[in-house]
Image (spheres, rainbow, N blue to C red):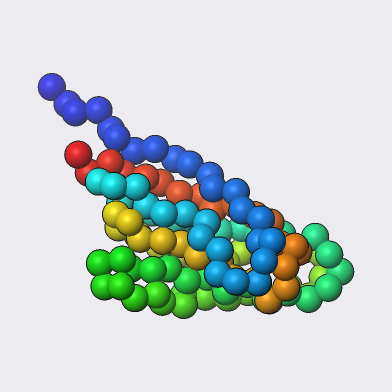
Length: 114
């Protein structure tokens, strides 16, 4: 008999209400996560830059993996052409150059390893 799929698609909404690093997602135990897209929206007429990074908890290291600059009211993507694979306990982080301007959502596939 075929084992049922343990894949779960989720959206993690975020509001970058500060200028420090903000954790938007932590991979659950016994799970691999595939981040498909991270879409953001600058809802002001002022410029903002958003940096995306992740913490590889197995190596205790944080890596900057991309950024996007928005100069006006617009939607923009932080992760577009490639997928990001995260392992158990890894952390996805966003940092905005200005607080209270950017909201968005990360689309993630979680694969249960049990």
